[in-house]
Image (cartoon, rainbow, N blue to C red; front, top):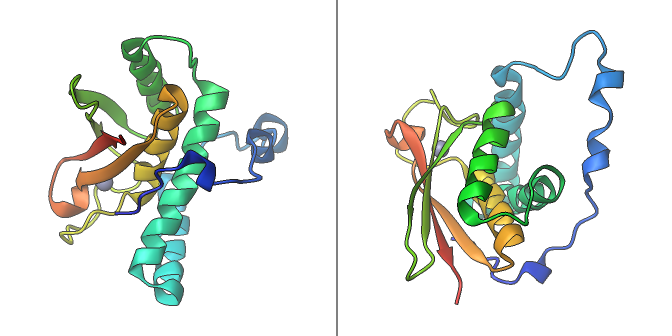
Length: 178
Ligand SMILES: [Zn+2]
């Protein structure tokens, strides 16, 4: 596991406006495109990163990119002032509307702060061949980025079930750091 326990350890230049004005730029084709295209990019980059830097660094890089994405998503698309149940409700709506997956909060352990969430029909992995290994490293980071931003705490997020491990949904455990 990669442990970005200090939020200040990641600095980045990316900002939401770098995504551009899709409505102007793609006036005929629009904002949607096939999942195949997304996965083609993702899995070709994954292969290059793994070949050039090894599996562990590939995992770390996807996770780190996910953290940045999660932070920016939280700041730009989510209301951070609401209570946790409302917050997860709006996160669920955003992920569904963006066709990322269907989020469900499975359990929030009030005593430890550990949160379990599942994502069904996940953009990254649903339908992949079963290899026995999880693949949703970007999602681990994204969930961490969102949770860290909302709570102002630091979470370690690990995918514990994935389509590629033979499960029907991805399941993530988010441990709150002390
Ligand atoms: Zn997965």
